[in-house]
Structure formats: structure tokens, C-alpha cells
Length: 455
Image (cartoon, rainbow, N blue to C red; front, side):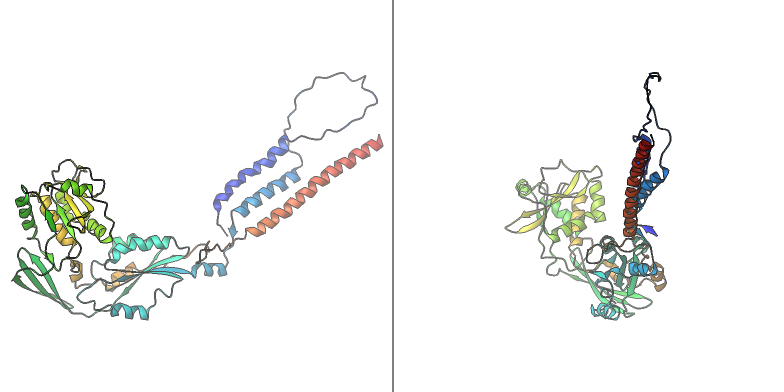
């Protein structure tokens, strides 16, 4: 037996009401007939107080009615084997597909073949599928969706499980009641990938050959740059243009994987740019998804965050149409981001409040190059995978439901409760209480008539 609304037991305090009524209720005076009152001395009226309960049977019946009504409001439910089975039959599952490109993962056909052999989404009562190159980042959203489902929950991750795809800290963030299923995508033991990167004025090509027990890398360099690898537009004042070029040149010495995104327009505005004030005035908070994605990745760039923490900046301008990307250690804005029209084109505009030749400026140039790289993340170069023993230690079944679902999968209440039997008992006891009360009044009237006749 479980109580689906245990808070209703607070209503037991109402049991005191019939006790109070029986203590303070008015009684019925008995009439005594005397042939004369002249021999009875006059007496002073004194207040009286009832100290004993009368009619205990009727009091017990009224108290029982309240207790049973409170129990019915608490929605009792007897957990039979049929009900327990029905509670644990439905399952909500989130399927996370690791679509990251790795040298040994192969085509999307590998994932499709796994899903054909194990139809994870179709086997669940309710399901959601998330395709992502970062399964660990998708766990929070999967948990949030499962928490809204009135049934058991499970997260299934389909991946090659390279080292770094998931770790124990990711599994700990999943509530214990949610199951974890890890499905490995088969892959070949060897793979080859070419990595193109740029550093300074040179282009580097790394040919990576991985096998079951080793990884070989062959490096080659060539002069010149590839198409589409140009840095973002930089708007600087005449007095600071030399310092901005120096910071930009320093940033190019940090290798960045190619190709870079040359389609999404980004403009960097230095503090001394002559039309900076008008750009700030006409800027609005970024609305486009790709802009906010770049802003979020810039805010997470460790080199830029560290440089900004120690930066010296001027007082921030009026920038209602921008958002802060990074701040100093004292909390003052260093980089602002807005959506502006530059050269008749909507662009993500980054306003720097640090000196154009400072370390922060160079870190900003380098961070922009890194976040606009279209190359696979460096973790995709990892040839090793998480062991089967480690994956087995992370797997777990969904926790069994201790009570039936309060809502059906289509969102309608199922109404399971055994309280209706208690309500029937309440109505029966009310009828009995009414009969007893009327019977007592009729009995008192009959006794009074009999005494009158006897007199």
C-alpha cells in the first residue's frame, strides 16, 4: 500500500472538531414538574462547564468519518503484481548518436547498421534522438527531457567511444533512477587521416596512420595559405594599426587546423577606430545561431579568458546592444559582441576594450581563428578507445518505479487510486451517523411524552 498524496494526512487535525462540538455543544434540559414552587428557595444562577464527553458512540462514529475521508484524500493504492508490472512497462529513452568524424569511425552507415540491429528509439514508449559530435555535452539536455516523462528513463549513447568521449564525471551527473546504455559502433583497427594546419606563413600537413598498437605521423610543410583561410576583418585607428598588425602576426604563430570558416563574417573593432562609437550605437544583441555559437566558444577559450583576466581596460562605453564575452579579474568587460552592419553586411562584431597591441588583443586574434576552424576537434585524432570493462561499469538499468504512473504517455491522467472504496465507507458512515442522530432525538421525544403522561 502506498499513498500518492501523503500531504493529505495533515487533515487529521480535523478530528478535533467533533470532540470540541461534543464538549461545548448545548445539552437538552430535562423538565421536572413540581406541584408548587413556594417551598423552594431562590438560588443564584452559576455558570457551568461540561467536563465529560457524552454519547461516545456517536463521537467515535463522527471521528471515524473524518479519518476515513482524510485517508481517501491521500489516494491509497494497493500495489498488486499487475499494477507493478504496468508501472515498469513504459520506458522513455534518449538516443545520443555520436556523429563526430574520426579517422577510424567510417561513414554514417556504421551507426545506421547498429540502429538497424538494435532499434533503440522504436523499442521505447517515448523517445528522442540527438545527433551530436559531443555526446557528453548532450547529457544535460537528455536528463532534462527524461525528468519531464512520467515513466522510467534511459539514455543510450551510440559511439565508437574514443578516449575522452565520456568519463566517470559525465556518468555521475546522470540521476541514479535513469538507466545508461552504451552501444559501441564497430570500427576498423586502422585508419588514415590528413590534418592541415597553418602557423605563421607556412601550411603544415600531418598524415596520421593509426593501428591497434601505434600511431605514426608524417609532417610536411609548404609556403603560402589556402583559400578561405584569411583572418577576420580588423578595424583599427591610424595610431594603433601598427600595434594591431603586430598582435595579429603573433596570433598566427599559434597553429590552427584548416580550413577556417570564411563564410560567417566577423569583424574585430579596436578601441581607437574612428567610427567605433557609431558602430556601438547601431549594434544589437546577436540573434543568429552561428553568432551565439562563436560567442560561447570564445567565452570558453582558456587562453583568451586568462589574458582578459589580467588585462588593463578603459571604462566601458554605453553598449546596450552588445553582450560581454570575457571580463577582467575585477569583473570589468574586456570583449563585447554585437550584431552590426559593416560595409552593407550583417556581421558579428567584436569590440575590444584592451590596447590593440596587448597580449589580450593577440589572444583574441588566436581565439577567433581557433573557434572558426572547421577541422574535427583534436580529440578525434585519438586512436584509443574506452575499454569494454570500463563501459560495462558505467552501464545500469533504469530504476523500477515504486508506484504506477500518474499520467499516461499521451498526457492524460490515468486516475489509479483505491480511495473510491474509502469514499463509499464515508458515505455509509454518514448515513449511519444521520440515522443515529435522528434516532436519539426521537427517543428523547418519546421519553418526554411518556414522563408527561406518567405525571
